[in-house]
Length: 396
Image (cartoon, rainbow, N blue to C red; front, side, top):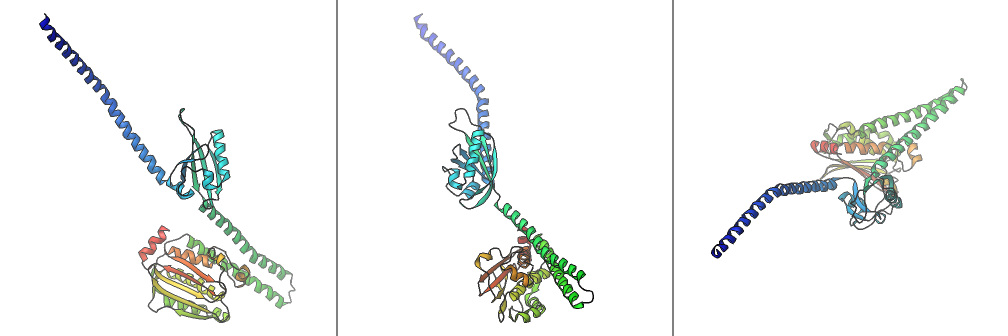
């Protein structure tokens, strides 16, 4: 009997091991789907994390995550572009110096409701920004609440709105002056003695002059409206020398009255790629201005050369020049350095704006250099390739 005891123990141990193996196999069969589900959930979570990361990276709006005190704990690249680099760990107030933004965050913290406002950030550079702040739900064991701050830079939008508002105001002002003059002279004409032709002729001459001024202004407004629409011009190869000589001949009366000398330094075989009417409009405005704002005995020089970007044309004068503070705005609609002088010369204040928009419609660029009481240089560059011109105009 004692001899069989070891064998019985071995048998019992074998049965126990077998039962344990069966249970382990069953447990493994039961846990395998859970493991696979966990792996699937982990992969799905990683996918959504990547999607969120790429979404935040591609957003044009600045997005930051802040604490209740305004400390930045996370930010996307757009936020770094708006607020500057190295913003993590700093507060919104430190990065923007905008106390209204701090008050907006405080209101969101106190009410736990989304807040929004249009604010002006003085730092790191002046910007008009539309800000939205949203409280984020947090787990009960979380150390503190977080808040999502979304900032949209609307500086360019507000600038364009201001330009449009100024444009409407300027148009109203520019039209009111000749209209008032026409009305005043018409009323005076009605009240003038019918047997005094000299007085009537004086009033009629003034009415005709002001009507011509209105006509020039409306014509320029129509040209500018077409230029701003940026239709892609049907360009062709044009010999520039012939166009310049023709325009100078048309301006011969103004040249003689101003007593200036016009020097044309354009090779006979110089070719530009442009729409002919628009090229003439560009050159007419630049040459006409160079004559108008020159000094008696001065000189106007028209030059052309090839540059890596294409064909460069420069109109240089020895006139009164433009103060540096006005150069940035010289191509704006109705912007005048000397309003009284411009009106006396018959200008509408739209010529340079027309030049800028027509050049850009060709895919080119325009520039100006000037020194007060020395003279000015207005230049533009047009691409030589028709394809390049069309592509640049469409892209802009």
